[in-house]
Image (cartoon, rainbow, N blue to C red):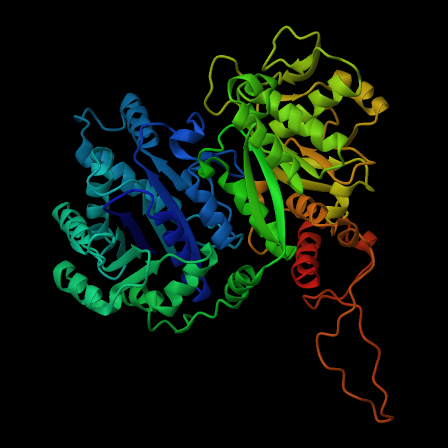
Length: 616
């Protein structure tokens, strides 16, 4: 097993997660199987109870793990499925050590940071690194480890000590350290400054870690004399100094790494440069095409994002990425209008009239509306008003988790004439509880007590838009994170009034997807489709929202095949050209949809091919 450690210096937020993901993409393109581990030095056991303002969104894995958002970057870039064990926290390490001590595993020893905590960290890394994450059997070839925080943070000291020991445990040729640092430009001077990086590397060396490669963040490409200076003072070869300057879109990062031969530097440190199966130059054709297509997009699609964490975009990172994947697939340049839900409420008209006016102007000027998940009652009335506006004005709408629940509340109040309708989360004494607390949930413990992870949703209305977007599949597996659900006892009343529950769980009592049949696109999902969206495989529901918002949904949902001729057909002897074959753009023979029902993955891939190539 080979290990690549990614650390960060000078300031936080440099993009260590994207750098680690980009390295993984390039190594994967070299023919290596890659896995990843994120180390978060905070004392929380996981990210589940943390506010999005504290640490960005909480990303949810298939196994129900609530983890750092960087694991979402890893999954999206590398198209892998990680587990909760791929996210190490100080809380997890200490909890494991204390549990062992209570069982007597340490044979009466005095438990200390060194060696017990540091050994636990190293053992955890070695154990998790061996688990395949790409659906294949056998261990991966390379494990990329990202150390969260900044070098010098007191809470990360045990991990730095452990990783220093770990580099000796695995031995030379098996450990490569990539240090991400900042090369700023002072406006007064106008030149790129190397001193912050010099001090960061000096601090790293003082803690027992020696960088093999420097990944320097900057606004503009590094000058050659700056690279030479960094090489001289940081003791890193110029060929191992990689510049990650600002780019137009995130998909250029793996291309930057490839063009600067970062993979060659890493493979050399890991003694892999002469392995036969590793090519010298990764192609990255799909990444090149995707980055280029994004830069050339002209026609825009404007989506109003109505939430209460709009001040920090990382709070909705996966939603933003899913919108981006879908918009590029549909050939549209994404414009996100951030609408604070509180500003839509009636009270805001009196308290902050300018903000109220601006929020409604943004909402009414959008091509589509998205209400993402959330917790708590702040801003809920504004979200309900946004759903009501979309429903009454035939504006494409996608509600996720809470966004689905507030759409149900609005329908109960406005259509079914139940003015007291509400969720018991916001009003425990409501006379019309259309959203209720799930029986299996806990009201005393918050951490890891929700309905979490991948769950199966069955389509009971096969002609609905959602089923068609998923390729006429009978069921889909999506990730969940919620404590409240639509009240199953009120479902018959809703359906009688015209709200269609097109997707349900295996028991048929838990509502998963809602639709308004006569609306252009009004869909709510109890699950979080954004967590499984990939650059090459956009989430079908997000594709539906973008398609509806850009006037392409009707064409997208047409069952007729696309006629293409992927290869020139040779002329027969009589001089006539043979008929064109009915094919998918990816080269697979077109089959009747009925024969493919149930094979969601193939259909989703085909759907993306149709979107990506058919509507460019």
